[in-house]
Image (cartoon, rainbow, N blue to C red):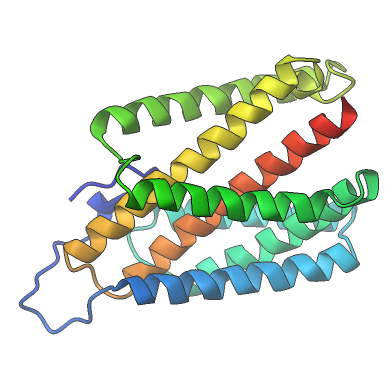
Length: 240
């Protein structure tokens, strides 16, 4: 049983033996764990939206959140406490970023939240209807496109240090920035297909209930990515 999602890669799992008495993962488990992680993230985000982090505190939370994301992604052992901690620090970062964006573009946060929910519901509908499936070809193309997008993003970051796009890198270049942002939203949204596929396969194979935490964590990572991409896209559209 192989997952196409690198964050939720199932090759790290032990073989699931249905003959054992270990509790099995269900869709309710996934919904519950995802809800817990999302609630923690939102509470932390609201806190820093009201009182944003500055300077060292912001970058400290950003680095810790990133490290926790990597640790949870590569660990063979499911560690719910670290996943909750990730939600806390990621929420602190998201809240601060959201406040900065909303100060410049009034109402943009509400629009980004609605857009994120719409993307999630839309992809879920397309997946359940069979119009989108994580076939080997789809997975290869998507992961290749995502890798290319992140490489381009890193180049854009370096370019921003040389004041390209008024310090925004390629995202600040007319036309190119809009195209990159649209691509970012599309890629992040389509990544949900890999999340849904992993969850479906895990349940079908009788994964232990604790794996629901990993599934919830994967969904949270993707939703945060979608939200940030939509936030950036909306800001570019506001500037046009």
